[in-house]
Amino acid sequence: MCDELGDTSYMQAYVEEAGQTSLCDVNEQSNCSSEEVAFIKKWSARKPIAIKTEATRLKVILSQGKLTSLARKWTSQRTAILNQLGQQSEHSDTSNGDL
Image (cartoon, rainbow, N blue to C red; front, side, top):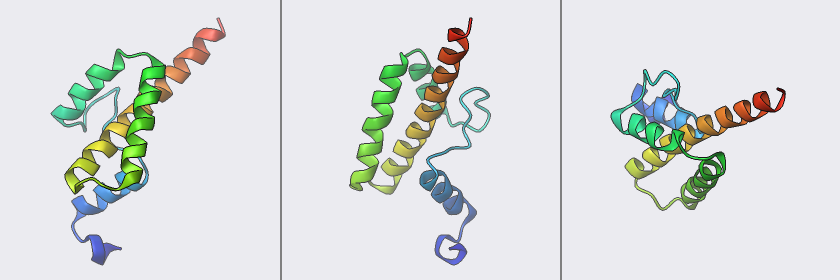
């Protein structure tokens, strides 16, 4: 795998895509690109159902495999961000329900 992917940035991109995760944290935004920060700002104000719907839509696009490598990377990044936002909304829903 190291021979195939070679460069560390390729390895990181592969791991992030395969694991549907990202170094970009929606809370801290320390390892986020400017595009990711803008995407977080846009989607953090949305309702949980909209976030879930968009994440599902992006997963379908990724599964079709008709994207360029750059488009695949950006779609994976957006999916990871939406997953984080979705988890946050689930945690806030359950914590509010206990009160």
